[in-house]
Length: 81
Image (cartoon, rainbow, N blue to C red):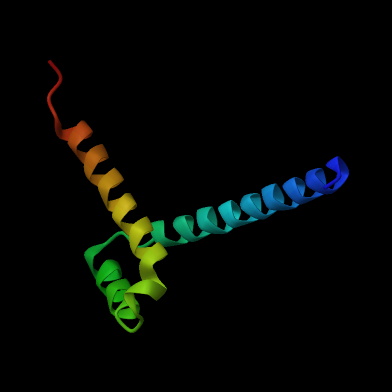
């Protein structure tokens, strides 16, 4: 395989990865808007209409966001010594 062909393939894969990352970041930003218990309950109802596999990525993002919020809350609430 020629170097030029390899480079073209590499560039295409990298461009694809960048595009996927942009989509994931946009989805993450949209999901971050669901913060209140009522909003999350509504989102859980929507997700419940689909299989675990179909919602795997969304559930992973939500779990990460919940963890980050908890950690941020603990940092704010913890006394400094």
